[in-house]
Length: 324
Image 1 (spheres, helix red, strand yellow):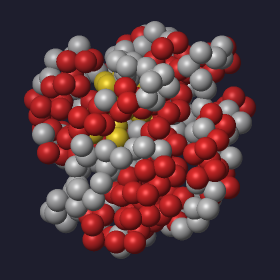
Image 2 (cartoon, helix red, strand yellow):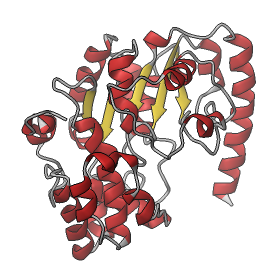
Image 3 (tube, helix red, strand yellow):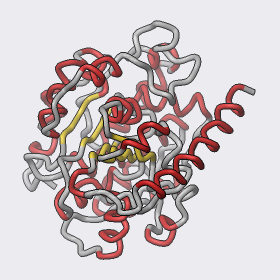
């Protein structure tokens, strides 16, 4: 019942916000000033978007690449979580993304997480994507944008959350992902994966392997969820410096508030270590299976430890001779 009421409230808020946004901001926004946050589902990207949206004059645009809620996405992308090589000419995609970054692609869905006050006072957009990781390098290199942010979180935590919700993307869809056309040997090694945690780990790997293989120095800011939890103030200082925005008290205080998407039985709500929940939810076999998939992609900076090997993670792409 609670979930249904929350869903209804979000729909009503989204409809009102969408109407007000179009009325107040019909001229749009400067796309070069939009703050872009990329990540995977349950990665902490919403949390960070809410922190940045807490700044006066900032408003969140929520998941504009969702094909089920933004119909035009289906006409431009023929595959979920699409991949576009950084060197490819892509005028149709450039036009669509420019519309998003300018606040010209607005509906009740993308405005569902904003407050009416933020909509009325908006001067800059904070745009959150969980379906854009494989577009990240293309956007960062080919469009005039502020340094995008990529949020990464331990795959065991993400997989545990997805399994608890019963989400399953299917092994066939993942193996057929166009990105793996570049890595036939990886596709072959993943062909026998079948357990739900293995398929979910494969999804995580595809979404992060692509951006992490970008040329160094990365054209985006890589932010670890674990680091945000353990050293939040320090990480915010790094993020705000990269964005050239003063770090104020409202952002710091908002850092310690749970995201609106946090569920009732989450570690944060129950007062437990937010990094340790997957240790209780996953069996040792499931953990081993997840980490085995990571090894196929050489994404071995995550282990059974709660935090990654930060140095190894930040320098991932440099381990490969061509950086791609």
